[in-house]
Image (tube, rainbow, N blue to C red; front, side, top):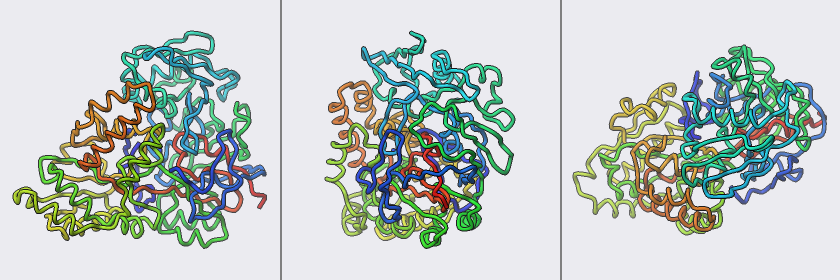
Length: 554
């Protein structure tokens, strides 16, 4: 998934459109059986996967979702921070991606691949919807078919290679493919694999996900109430199947504050018990406060520049490479992102390496830099570029937010130092999405800012959306890895598939296309003094993070 705007809000948005598309070596490690890592240090200077486990029960907490009120909580249409942060505790998926960026069985207890074009899923027994009725194979088949065929579903593109989905047993579902696709199975750990109650959707239709209708899912929290402009309340589902999760908080009020000062004040005063992505402007106050603790965890978040137009100077690989060299990525990570951003070695960040972790780590280390600008080297490279290309103006559009404007200024400064003609355009944050998704609005814009996160911890997910023809975030129409990507998706052997991924990443790195390797970010979570246990890692968009919360006894 990607969001066109920063998770640390500098201005309020009514809504943001998001589409498509997770660090090894963290200081704390979490178990994958539903228990928290009691050894987490709580230091904001070291990354940890889980915050310390708690024991006590809590009747009610208030949790703020920084991006504002969602338009819907229908999981088929949920593809951004706010709806997913809420939905991840209510609606579950066939497979699950855990806070340590692994993909595990969930509503499906196992899966097999008897031939290259067949996937068979065994469903978990004892799973019930919030009304007490059992989850059946019919519900799973309906949910998958809805994802595949409903034009309003965000995740339909994940089913492009699916030929049929059928119930083949009381607790078995079989998916037949048009051609081998070894990415499809992993994608079921996103809302591509969400399961909802068939009869509820058939009864309520397009009203599902609205305040007056809500949802019917199997997760640890059930939809209780939505008060427009104020909050969404989720209540603990005591019939939840996974008894390994603590599930100690009975009710959660999700509030929609977007003003940085108001959020920080609410956290410090205890009016808000917790939040992911607390305001950057308030981090120093939060770190110094005894009202709670600020934790940082590994994340699949990358701040990048996207090449949107190859007809201008950005169509020249040496111009792109020279600009990338000249940018002070180290300084941007320190100054703009409060020290929580570090230069990324590759376009795909470490938390997304997945099955290719060893191979991509080795290659990433071989091209890694500390992000210090290399002005002389960039100038030397530009000297070989035809003068008429060097003199073409390069335009960058960023949304009108404190961080993104600082980022834009830093990039313009780099361009100026190496003699490129550069124009920075700052547009209202509420209209920035149009530049990403509307070619008419974008026009001849050369570069676009984005903050990117994927569906799942799998590099093919990232590459498929950003760098393959038809990818929803491939604005320039780059096609340089199409053949390699098709081979990788169809390759069963993980070693051979990983080798293909490295070849793709090398080509993208050598060409600095269609994205620049930018800044990878960490994930912040603030927990007030009453609660603890939430994952600190960035996993709150598809994983039931709130089920780990418990009281501290304070």
